[in-house]
Image 1 (tube, helix red, strand yellow):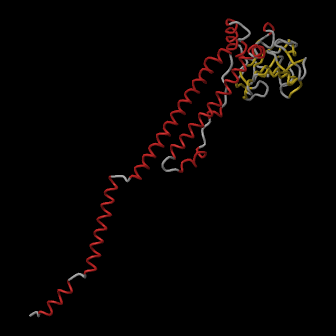
Image 2 (cartoon, helix red, strand yellow; image 1 turned 180 degrees about the horizontal axis):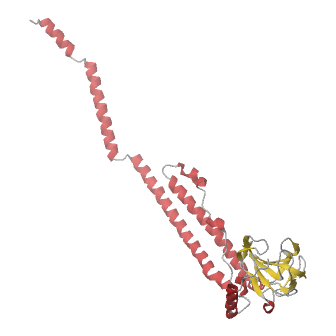
Image 3 (cartoon, one colour; image 1 turned 90 degrees about the vertical axis):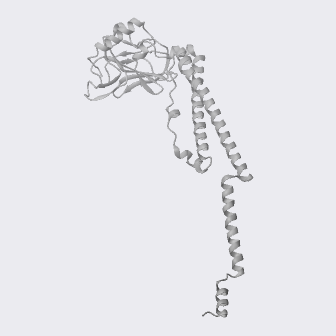
Length: 316
């Protein structure tokens, strides 16, 4: 049988102290308040956050407008370059300006430091890429148009310096013994690039300057024998090799058609012929492409037929 005293003791043990009850209520209230705050902020923005997001959108809009303006400028530059290539240069009969560096791939490491910004890193990097491409295009267009302007102002001079005639009298030509391009060397027996054209002709046949120029070499050179090199300006140079006689010296000015030497077989050669080269901006080009400036269309086609069917012999 339980006594009254023992019943009171049990009741006092089960009852939570008042301070603890207050603390528990405060904890629950705080938890509910935090939960409500998280829930509210998840669906609504504070004025500060709202302003920050508006500023982010505004900055991205400005990036977009800037890239559109860069793209528009790039399009204008591309159109200028296209007109220069397809209209101005063909009218002046000049080759397209070649600057490989303009089209070289960009080194991504250059832009690595621009991607540090989590919000705008990609926008900043892409904008810089577009600006760099625009700068390259503007540089190319400027050089190309400057050159076109120079050639237009000096058209008369240009037409006189370009290698545009045969270096020997065509009636003295026996045959074209070797074309421009890869071939097996007739004396050494191995494959190598032939950087000119070989015109077989009798010993002593006159050799002429193919355009107005300044003589930059007139001496003996290993392999070429007696050789003359001319600088025509505007990027053009010509070479005349295996000569029997040389009538000019370095520093002389010569006009198109001037007698500069005679056909021989000096240097590495198996017979009398003129080895003739044309160089443009430091690169050798096919001299045949310049022969049609000195002959009519029918004669040029006959020459091409001869080159196709009569190229069995080679002199150097």
